[in-house]
Image (tube, each protein chain N blue to C red):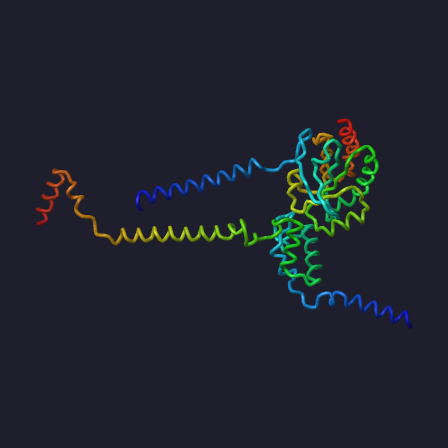
Length: 153
Length: 179
């Protein structure tokens, strides 16, 4: 009887173990696998079936079950694999350039485009060309135009 | 558009094209290749697996070195583990150093692999793959044998137990011992 009771208690402990480890995980594998790279195939974990990716997923699942936060898991992976394990560069230090440069490029492009459009519209709205072209006609052409105009009259 | 503005735009475009061209040339000239036989092996300092401190390849100068690149998720690495341990116990008395380089691996998994296969030679970890890349390695396992001066004597791309490599490791180690 005692043996049976002990066996039931042990089974209950085994079953309750994972739940007791972390009742309310703060993150999940599904949340993280799009943010972590597979180091051997250079795609995110959710797009990889490589053995290395499967191992990293198992590691994430273990840490999620231990109630680790997404930040803690990412930090541990960076310590293990280097910053290249993250799909997006961190928002600090030199890596900030990777975030700001595209925005700066888009803004610069927009400014250039606006400038171009403004100048183009201004040139269209401006006064029509003065008859400078007429004055640049040579005397022979001027004479012929005068004749044509006289004929029209 | 005014002439100076147009000129500035052309200069910026030219600078962009020159920058991209420079990047392409840099990428082409800095591609990583496996060191050739007789060439010096790329030096490195990596942290020890399952313990504190680091191991530097330069500190092993003067002794033949067998560098084995592996990972716990690599199936052929399991098949060659026993053969490597056997070779290590055979040659360690003659001054040969075996150094395992664990590649792109979760530390806990790598430590479990070492324990499961009862590997006793020193191990370092290259989590980022930077060092492994300098050896031109894309798949594990691979093994390099270096002579006493740190030059490559042998490179086996595959498990040392592969039938095509029969006797190759012994030949490489003997050659390294003669250096």
